[in-house]
Length: 266
Ligand SMILES: C[S@@+](CC[C@H](N)C(=O)[O-])C[C@H]1O[C@@H](n2cnc3c(N)ncnc32)[C@H](O)[C@@H]1O
Image (tube, rainbow, N blue to C red; front, side):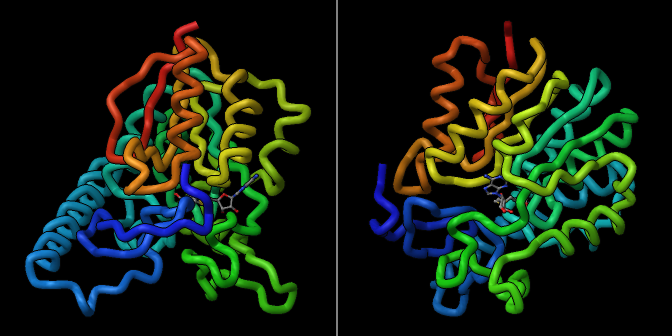
């Protein structure tokens, strides 16, 4: 596993070459395109069009406001979002779903919309103080989400606006605390858990240890940012994904881009 200080050059999903740390994320925040050579620009344009098409598919399927979806800050690829939505449709009719890592609500739109269709609930956990890589000076710091008065990140306001605009306030329940604190007294069985919180190994493993045991047989565990090749991204989610498989509690379903999908078998 790379140390946080280590850095390599990699090409991201839009064909843009950037330096990578162990906490590298696929993100739409602060991308630089001006110095990209023409073939890479063409590839980036092609990928951008694929993303727009995937957004269109989701929005047409669920009659959703595409402009809202595209304007919500976040790190989720539309194809991954569509997979979240499809998996939540399978799960939500049988009981509640839960995500760790609300941020500004992009993944909650996909999961929450499926919950709304199935008259179910998505619990969405986040302390809204940002992950390590979103802090001042770090690669995914976004000053628009920083509260300069308290000198802390604060994504809660944006998250609530997203839920309101998306009409999801009756189907998404925000839980504003650390994931392990929320887990302390938790006892409801869950039909889907999506892990997309902190990306250090300790935090991602803690999320798994706190929540995987609540998933019912037949329910789903989804983990974002699975990078089997360390050159493409941080290894913590991938290690936790492998840990889940080694438990023999889960079977592997096909991945969508960096979204790992497991189904609980016992
Ligand atoms: C990558 S972002 C989530 C992105 C979101 N799923 C989306 O689709 O846009 C990670 C979020 O996890 C939150 N987070 C990090 N560690 C956490 C923890 N231990 N408990 C709760 N939230 C945490 C951060 O505040 C941040 O908002």
